[in-house]
Image (cartoon, rainbow, N blue to C red; front, side, top):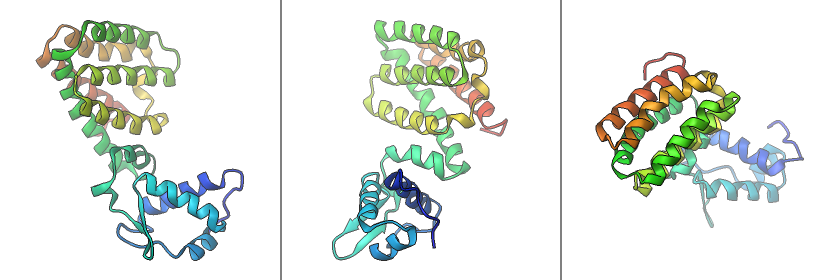
Length: 231
């Protein structure tokens, strides 16, 4: 028997519970969930509440429902959208986080390189403004958010909307768990100094320099975030 779910946020809580059970392998990819009546009883909720929760999990790509068959767990690693990354980062363990950081580093370097060749005067001005704001930010959370905004503008300045979508998915995944990775953002001035070479290279139109600077910056911050582990 499952522990009772709080009635105040029953659908949200049930979504979280079923999602965690899927991502931790209690309900493996390809398997059918138990019948609704049985599942509702196990979670101690009504079938109406269960249906609402399942609909939301279908919408994010974790489940699929077929009439006459039931609700099946999707092979989300093969079929889900990048919008699922924040959920995986929050719930699916350290391996996902390391791979998210690895992708962030590699894609971030390509974005910086491309931005150096495509950034408009407005993009360059905005990047300089954001770097200054980063250096003045007060509090770890504000510094983290300011740093992310620089990366969002870099992605937009690349002129490639697919890079923008991927970059934002990676940033959103990181933001879901940013409270675990505060080390690089305790000192706003130091955070701005680390990022400054990327902004300078992009604003100078130096594509090779921008890529190298971004790779170095993302490697350094990854090491700080993950406690000195190998990137």
